[in-house]
Every structure is written in C-alpha cells, then in structure tokens.
Image (cartoon, rainbow, N blue to C red; front, side, top):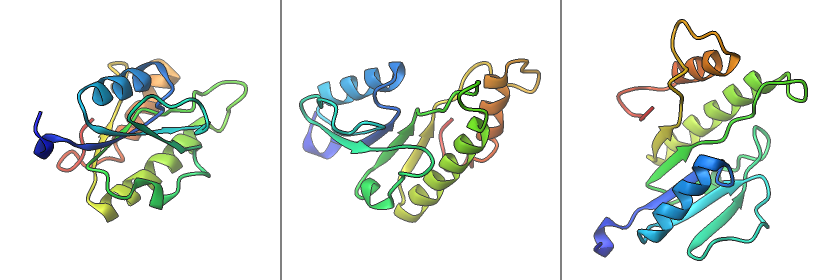
Length: 141
C-alpha cells in the first residue's frame, strides 16, 4: 500500500463484534483508524486512536475532524433496558449525518438483511427506518 492509499477511517461501535473486526482489519492494512466506543479508556490496539462515543449525548463533532470515511456500526438495541432505543438510534444517526455532511466525510451505515418492508423483527424495522434517513447518492448502506 502506498501512502496515497492510506485512509483515515472511523468506526462507531468499535468494541462490538463487527466493529472490532473492522478496526483490526483496517489497522492491519495500514490505515489510520479511529475507534468510537463508550469506553475510550479501554486498551487500544496498536495504531488505533480511541474516542469516547456514547449515543446520543456524547457525539462531539471535533472528534471526527480529518476522517475520510465513517462506518456507523453502533446501535442501541431495543429491549426492557432501552425502550427509547429507536429514538436514540435516530437522533444519533441524524447527528452523524450532520457531522459527516459538514466535513465531507463518506458515511457507511451498517444495516441488516432483516431490514426490509415485510420485516417482523423490531431490529429489522428499526434498521429499515434508519436506512430511510440516508441519501443513497452520498451514503453507503
């Protein structure tokens, strides 16, 4: 890889299953990786820059400066402990859309195959509603 192909990539939900694998893979490939997670003080991986990220309240625009791409993998799962998960996910995505648009950062939203008009699961319906907030001409779903 040449220095010209090195990207500055941010990953929300960086300590989750998919997010942690993305962070590791991008770091292995020599990209500058920013991990956005609830506990930024967790032991970072070599070459990874941790950031505190808690939806929806702790999303600081300055933490995203200089990124080329932001992969949004974080999600608050609906359940007894989080009856407000849909609102949190929507507010957080709206905030990230605002931040990425203002900084010309490419936004990649990790959705699910369960996100479709006939979805029976709350998860699938929520992901589909979040997809509708994105611009297919600008964003990747």
